[in-house]
Length: 137
Length: 117
Image 1: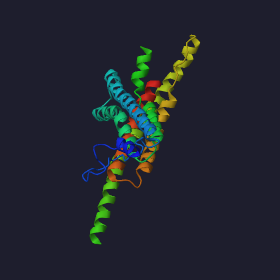
Image 2: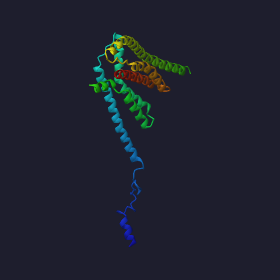
Image 3: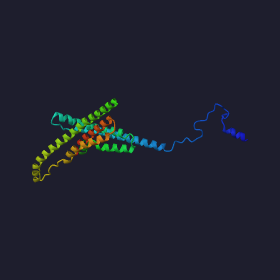
Image 4: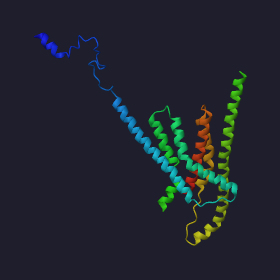
């Protein structure tokens, strides 16, 4: 009788089958390692945050373009005018340059450090002439 | 050994070139801001004579934007120093990027403080 019960736990004579190979699991738990779920959530949240920051920096650059198009200032001579327009070009490029520099310099830093630098940059290179004019309009 | 010495010499020359060229742009920002301050001082001298008339007429005298004018002079040297410090011990490309970003931030902040004036 006991022999019949043991037979019920085996399948198609697998015990005697020389070609049978045990599965990878081998009866062990297949639960994900502890903490992996939290890490995945954090990185997703970070990705969303980076996406928001990229959008804000892009809007910043667009704000500078619009703000500069509204600027009616013209310098006295050609050299001053060229340098003034070069300054305006740099102002448009400032969000892109700050973002790139922050990403390159904080490659090995903690994400919070990178985010803090990015937020600081967002305040520093915000298109204030456009924002102030927009608020006044 | 000589090849290595030449390599170091070239690297130093390239670093010095980047520092000098970007330094000239930073210096121009200071000159531009100083010229603006000089014009402002001349304008204030004219306004002072008018202020007495305005006050007599019961009007407010014009507010002189001293803070933006002085900030525009101080920003470039501070940004240049920070960019040089940040780029120390890094590759030439990173140094150039630090200096370019500093120059761009100076340009953006100068326009911004003018907007607030």
